[in-house]
Image (cartoon, rainbow, N blue to C red; front, side, top):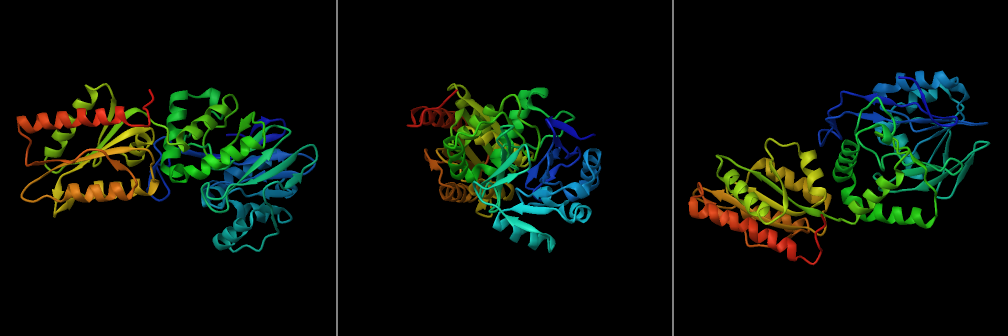
Amino acid sequence: MCALEIKKDIYWVGAVDWNVRNFHGHTYTTKRGTTYNAYLVKDEKIALIDTVHPAFTGELIEKIKQLTPLENIDYIITNHVEVDHSGALPEVLKLCPMAKVLGTKKCKEGLYKHYYGNWDFQFVKTGDELNLGKRVLTFLEAPMLHWPESMFTYCPQEELLFPNDAFGQHYATSERFDDEVDQFVLMDEAAKYYGNILWPLSAMVLKKIEEVQKMNIALRMIAPSHGIIWRSFPTKIIEAYSSWAKNETKNKVAIVYETMWGATGKMARMIAEGIIDSGLNIKLFDITFSDRTEVIREMLDSKGYVIGSSTHDNDMLTTIAGFLQFLKGLKPKNRLACVFGSYGWAGGAIQEIEKVIKEAGIEISLPSLSVQYIPNEQESVRCYEFGKDFAKKLKSDGNELTQ
């Protein structure tokens, strides 16, 4: 794949990783692969904005060579230290040893601890400018979006924002722009990306969006470091981020459970029927067979959570336990939950689930429902009514459900 001009003399020089299926260790599944986007700005001075995963260093270098000898690069801007964006930096700098590296103070600290390179580094902070000739690049610190050193780079002459991980998606395609791909898939991947990576940082996301809006920064294009470039609908992803950051929800319930011999699964299906018959949408997941990344994506805009487990050794089963710990770290706000489960000779799962749900700051809106062994006909009706009662609670909640 060749370098691609996205604006006059501004080029995408990144790489498409078609085959990656796990990210951030194994915490995030990437069923559609991903991209590592880097950008070259050719002016009187030449700037490279971010690099790529080290496995794709050769592709980055070859794309740059299509446009200019690497020794002509004057500046390398590092918006984010994480290896999938900075991993090619040491090899690139061997080919342009006179280039100056720009980033925040914490960026320099992070780069040194990753690569131990004695590079010519220039600190930048919010409001600083880099004059390339016809164009200026300005910098906006974005700490904890999603690392301490993260920052955005903006070109006012092109109304073009390079926000690194913000507004990205793990989405490998041969197309580069938002108007060239399926919109449902694009927004689904963007939501999954936000839910699994940025959700716990929502307060800071909202603050940064408001800060940018107050600065009256015009945006005709957003070029993130993963996935598709937003050239036709940049306001669409900003509005989506604002909604997710505010924890706005849809008329939907996520039911997540783990079952040992099927009793808890039977309860889950009856509870789901009660919710559906009350007019709400549901997503039902047996966490043992479900992709955790996809479950979190559905929970991102669900108002209600129904969590269940069989009891084993007076506790919940291990897969749901690990999932709930991950959910707790994402810090969902303005949600209601209820808990259910089955047991044999002794209970305990429900109490442990309730504990984690409360620690996550999620309100439990109903007394939990417990059934010994396999639910009989009367207990199945109780499960159905439990679902209806939960739907009623959601509808009457002060934070009105949206469609």
